Length: 454
Image 1 (cartoon, helix red, strand yellow):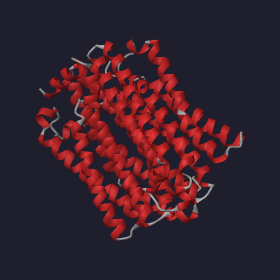
Image 2 (cartoon, rainbow, N blue to C red):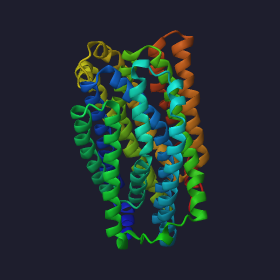
Image 3 (cartoon, helix red, strand yellow):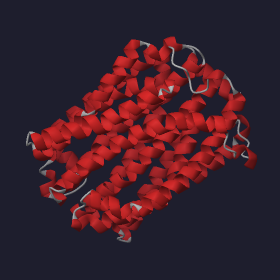
Image 4 (cartoon, rainbow, N blue to C red):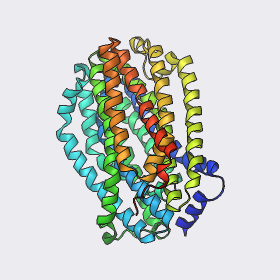
């Protein structure tokens, strides 16, 4: 069966090579997501201007808060499925797939309702510049209404990656990216719908991708091991408890980081629409490294989970160090590019001289982000692959609240460095969580930690 061959591929032979082979489709898939988010910013910057950039940036942050919560739970689904695959428990695997789909659908509906009702409150908390207020609101509300498609894609991708298939999620996100690009040009450049058009293009691109992915899964249901009968979507209590046990700490971890980012964004917005737009462009650029490190980390977590499920912990060491080497190399290359060509890179997004003038100042911030992401990914892969819920929660709180907000306030307000303090405070927070993960990995306690499936 397909599941058996995946396990053999992931647990035999050269682990370093397998990590790269398994992670590169995931990496490309996430890079495509970054690219179509960047396309949103380029289109809106060129056809609407600085107010459009600030609007999409703030609206995107508001959407990301809920998106990161969803990612926490879908990551838990992926890790649980990977552990079942590693253990060879076909019945547990079937129940985990059905529970994942149903739970994610309910989660999407609940998040849409909460997000729509809380939209105006978030806009006020962020102190969105008045010039960009309506654009940010339109972007956020449109994306909130489409959460079912975002969760749908993440759920399908989590199931496939948990089973060892990282190639088809790449195909599905490619479809979303191409659809988004075409619709962006139509809605923004041709119809002049501004931020609303950008958001609508994103939602429709995700919807097209989800429909195609579900058709694929249904046609491959025999080898996939899930029959898609209504009864198979019943939520299993045991599986749900395991998902929630890890999902809540992961969601808190991601959400805490995003809440801290929103806190910093609120201060950044007080410096006006130009600085807000600069930060928005910078956030999209830093997401390149974030996505690459998350891809390596998520692929590594799946491999850690499968190898531990198959009782082969010795392979975890190679997974960690290869992940660290790859992420560090990418961080170094990106750092050189952004330090050498800051004006040219920012100029891709806008022709506004006031925004481009800030590019060299933000390049150093990006370097700090790049290496903090690189050091976080490998050790988080161990924590998440094992399914260590309490440590995941601690990492999230340390990163999102103690380090990110604390350092930003210390440097930005107490020491009087203003906007630079907030930028660098946020960028360097990841080193704190990387240190926690490193200590846990070196301690070796992950070898004896009880798995979710047990």
